[in-house]
Length: 500
Image (cartoon, rainbow, N blue to C red; front, side):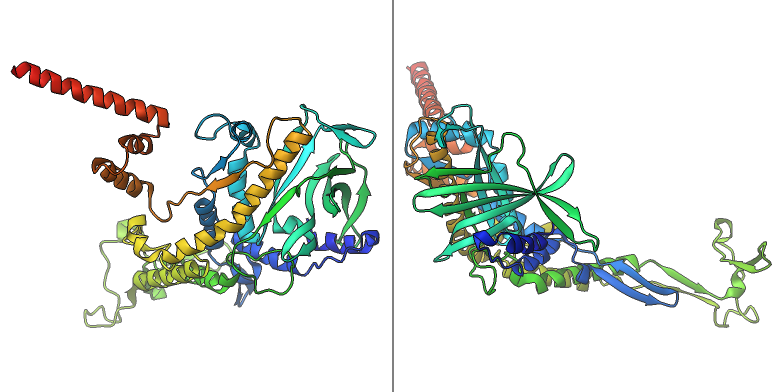
């Protein structure tokens, strides 16, 4: 959907809301999206001028901006990230009753895979949003009542879908979220607006049919709400029903108040350098086949149906072994009328060029200078990378802060809705913290090996090592430890008894 055209439409038609949205920043977001997809027309479409006219060729791309965003998402929010929730009933409601946190409401919402993807969306677009909604809630006389059959839903939106309406001290307190959907088989725009008045929060839903004007520009027409959807919902005393986060780097772009910038916004020249180096490498390989130049006199001449000669080069297999030597007099000393050419593939120089650009790209995106290090056909291991990862550690710790705030914020909104709109037995004010996966500092194998050494030295209980090594619960690890002790004592008894 053309977000810029829709913003201009809102600025013209929603005068009662006094909207003055700035569409210029969304053109930057569109550029970042193109880099994330690996197809920027001004960079990857190469024009070639020949005698028979202009031609285009697509420049090869490693699509590193997407890979960078995937790496950041996997580092910051993965299957090792967990929540620590103080109230037991609230923890069971959200996370389930097992230690792996594989049950509960978050599992029903497919929260972790969607949250991981949202980090990638936020890192290419500059901002990500968790947006809460409740389906099936009922009320009387304008007052909502708790309904256990209601359902909590979450949307995960990139910056291209986020319209900040009010920003106070750098925090977005009111916002609208735009997305495209289909209604009656026609494309529509869905606008959800979150506003605040005192202690009350209002969520307003609007739909717009999208058509094409005579000049090809999109035309937006108000559309009635689908069955079962309310146009407005007001709650009292609720936290915000959305939570935003951005890459932690301070934005150096003046426009786009309330939105962040892509994690590779400062690395576009490096990203272009990667693709230039990779495309050159690929072209050298493509053009590097052996070539044989020969005089036309060596060709077999065949007259075509149009009366014009056709020259067939002497490459028939049966004639490859024996040739009379070409030359004016057939002499061995005469200059041959053919010669062989083997282009230089320049693999070493091309490899170094690609590696240099990858190092710059990695550095500019906060992943360290040697995140992507290819030597002898392999990628540097985590252990080899340890000595130069300090910059990654610092950047990762800094980027966890806004994500943690957003995670806790949206969980509190979910718990408020669960208690007040679904009647669930939860405590919205319970303590919530995030346990981060820090394998980017030390790998799981290294951690387990160190834990084993500490257990053998008596510095930590052996059950801790068993739990980490075999993925056991605390009770299972204690049971294994006791069984091991019993077996060891039994062996000692048998040994000493046999020798008596």
